[in-house]
Image (tube, rainbow, N blue to C red):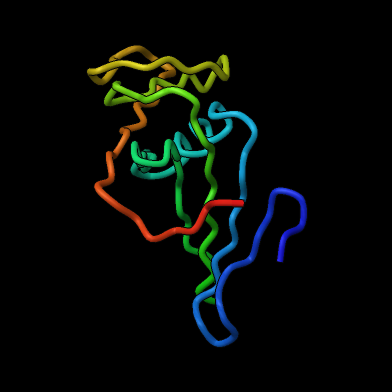
Length: 114
């Protein structure tokens, strides 16, 4: 079922997956910067960046964006004070910057089309 940018996937009794398509990659990077181990998953084959978060009752929330261009960087440097981000190949040592690692996936089975 689709309601705005949210879709619920899964059968009754199975693990429930909620899909949230974000309009701006910056929102996904800021969300990832708040994780204890900040990272985003990147699928070059379909140009999708996503973060999956487990919740209560076995519900998994997947936040994702589709990119128009391929990513080559290994990190996203998120300045949490200013709310800005930039890409880099090495971790930043700047204060107020959280390094979000970009994990490159060989494959995934999320159905994010539609």
